[in-house]
Length: 310
Image 1 (cartoon, rainbow, N blue to C red):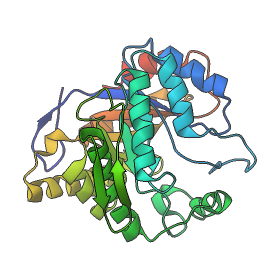
Image 2: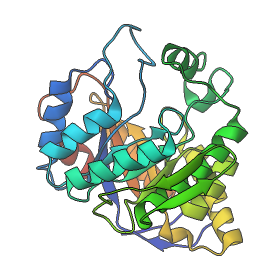
Image 3: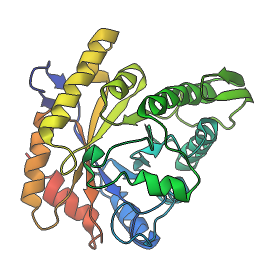
């Protein structure tokens, strides 16, 4: 399809839809049910989890599943869906460990992984990222012995991780000497099924992060409504375009991905928002499912949202 971002050149890119099941206050059996159903619904191209270790909303003692472990289980049981995390926290796992995990999941899935990656927990003021209240990463990281870092350091660490992942997936053995990470004699076998590696999705919205997207990513993801307005998503997309222009990269090479919270009670409103996001230049819409997940929700999304948005 052809879509136009205001102020930008027209791009011709197929529009794709995915689903996101947030593994918080939801039993494993329900997540598995939705993914297995979505795997049979061709209108849904991909499925996503997130990456937190404690609930960020609702009861603090609620269940939450570790995302990469869960992703591997779901990868083994599905056959068609592309899959990944929106997004992996770069602060939870060392980069080379993450690269080994991702290689394994790509093998398990037969080459269906998209590596979604973000800065992870940094020092942020209350309300940052459209999430009301104190930074939820503070309690989460204290509980698991992790450290928050300043945003600039988080971004620098993410840039080094991208370099490490690409080395692990393309070289037999290599060393890495960065400011934050140092590796000696790193090997990764088996390599991912996808060559030279799984597509790289970077999630976030900061101007410096969008520069990293322009330099390295195949996809860019940003939270949309209700966390960020359509106008803000469009403005951030224009910033990404400007970075691409400075680097001499075709901005159409980068898939523009956005998360949208679905309304089960008002699908017409969700369809309208999808249309506004497409008009803003987004070409990958991830439909985030509120809990609990109704029976047959994947087919419902295809019929009520995906088939009727335009």
